[in-house]
Length: 265
Image (cartoon, rainbow, N blue to C red; front, side, top):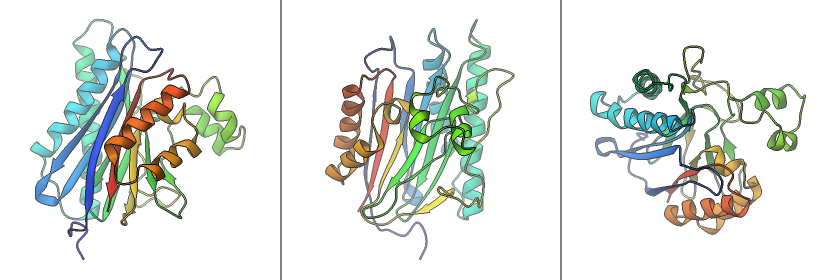
């Protein structure tokens, strides 16, 4: 059966919030429908740069993701779809760099990003930085993307634990982003056909919930709390996104919070 065969991708919703500490919201998000393929492109971006630069960067990136399907028709084959979404990241990287070059003092602004191309039966998710993709499935282990950050390297090499990573002083130091100045490097993962806990393509079943979010959610609310919210609000993406933001507020909301939720029935 075709991966685009009708089998029901339910409603999707997103919410962004300034949080309780930051003076402005430098996150951005979007849901872009591709009706001809029964597909949805979801994107979350977390801006960096301060003095308004982060907000400009994240919006420039989301706008680039929005333009991408209009100028580049979605192909059919998996390998071509991977290259299509990868191309969207590089287009967004170029858009952020171009926007920064036009503004005094914002050459180094950037954004982390996660994007998912979702059809009723499959999902292709890629990321750059520490915005995350999650797939929740009843009775199964939760899948989530591996952050491009220094603390993720420390965890992977056994130098610190997952618990220590949550409060490590360098937990916000990332190793990949869109833009970020002439010395920044864009790395997009997972790689094509990569094996591991989160491959590029994941199959979808009725009952699955997909979550894309900035670190303002997962860096504040414990994983167990997020999983509980998903269970309690299954099939209700708007309420789930709102509940995730509220959960981050309950833990201090020291950062901007953005969540996109998608449910499969």
